[in-house]
Image (cartoon, rainbow, N blue to C red; front, side):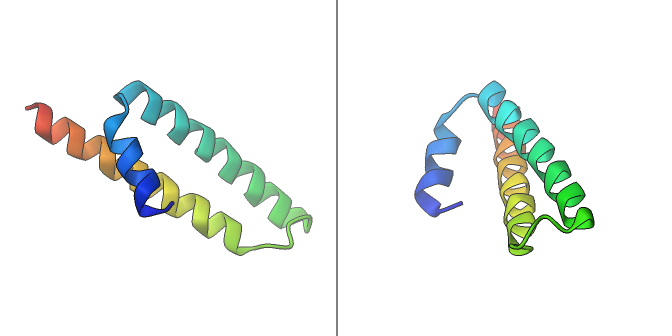
Amino acid sequence: MKIKELQEWRKKKMEEIRKETEGLRERLVGLRIDLAVGKVKNIREARLVKKSIAQLETIQNEKLENSK
């Protein structure tokens, strides 16, 4: 994700972030299956999805820390 996208995600509610994270996790599972079968040509896409998941989880943790 780009910096501007991350800034927009920081403004959104926790529920929206959780839904997006779940969707990305499902996409990652699909990519892993396709990679094992040989359908995926762009191997780097899985890495980008994992990075996006990590970034969203970091935003979730920041929100939790700030709410305490």
